[in-house]
Length: 528
Image: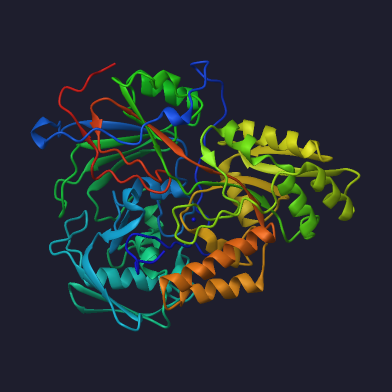
């Protein structure tokens, strides 16, 4: 974790896929004193006119989690979307994260929906081309979508297009998508990775270390374990980027990232630790932006295995955890009570379900027959703050549960937990927007299966109105919370540090995508 029936809102789903993001690594503060996240700014200075900008500038950006592959077709993880979506690859449509995820033109300048909602017609921008200078036509878009809907497709997002009956090109500039039934999620799905338009005949297996895009930036270099460098596509068919190149540096340790930012090695620090912002208190040198996210730090239960097959155990674990303490420990976030963040139109405050109540948690565990001491394991990627798992250990100990934390590499988590479902408890940041659909996929690693929730979700996809859709999705969100399918520890807020003289930096949902279209650098920017 969203249709464009109402342009100001969004509807998203990641059916049968995992889209995860790195959080903040653990570490002691370099400044000693914690700076409150409320001190951060919510606006940036206006970008100067082009004649005051340095078009030859290089922008250095620090990120946390590096992609495991550059194959956008079947590789899991938002680390890939964060760098390549909008920048290197484009779809027919995209989203404006600063406008509540409004769906906006990308390769298509406009589109229409038939009155019955079964046909979508997209009109391509003229002169669009790929990085090899070949023209991008409707045939490429048709071929790309056919790879999503092909029987046995290995695409990470193939399930998002199950409603598509056919894709055609009436002419080289027109793409027509015909549906089997109404799908209120189609446009949103097209804004995500499954909507990328590839050159017809692309061999996806060669994309691991290469690219085949149409966006404003070219992939110049990937130093595995270190950085990814993008350079301006001077032959881009649309509005040209305002900087010459952008280098993404992968720095897991927050102190190291802070040092790189404060000494001028980097210009932008994405997902800065909100408890370690003191080095950036000089507003003449830095702007610290706070933004919304869809980063749901989720405590996943393996619902298909004992003891979590007993809902009383799941409810007990939820009631044993002090979510407000978790938020204070993390430094910036809110409680949500289910999988839906407030920016989604079907959000409902569900924090009243399973509130912090350790005494009742003990009673539930006793009723489930495990009140005399329960030992559990927690698998957590080592990119997350150890303070979060430490708090889980402490809270669960108070209700008689012994928790053993196993920190593992993210790649190991993907194979052990996500793929093999070999776990009891897992802590991970589910960063994708609108991923409520994960809870209606019985094969998903949560092991959760509720027939009623699946029916409501299916009905929401074919709903006649946005109001009907939203009401149904609220029911799904409430059901998974009432079933204690997982525990949603917190919805994170993001903090991005920007050096003075750098403008147009993405502020919202930066772990999902980091659109470089407006990033700019002033001439003669100060050097630390």
